[in-house]
Image (cartoon, rainbow, N blue to C red):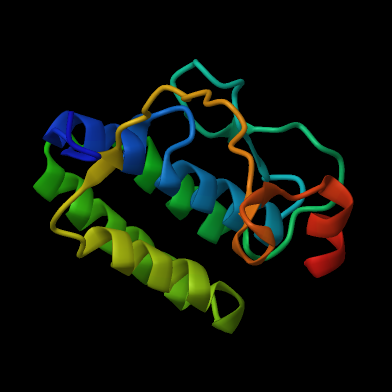
Length: 154
């Protein structure tokens, strides 16, 4: 098989938005945790559908709770096509950028993913075991070099 294979639209949507380690979910969770410790988002265990839920942590609400609610509402949407997912990533980028310079890198990352046209994954080839190949020193008539000599020359 070829070393790279193109991802299907469904696989890209899962990677960006809906999967257990989806990019949008992780970015939103991190942003929420920085905005308000009380409204902070908890990530469900891997293998379950990722939805942001209140973590129930103690602490005071901040004036950024409205921002947390907007981000949560956006990531709870379920885009079904790649185009819808890319548009949702662009919206998430706008929300993050509006939060200030602390979130600029996350906003840029959303735009990078939203504007990516070709998605692929690497094929995992099985490991190959081969016997050890002895090295020969050509200056000494082709004699097999000792391990100590090899280490000394390195």
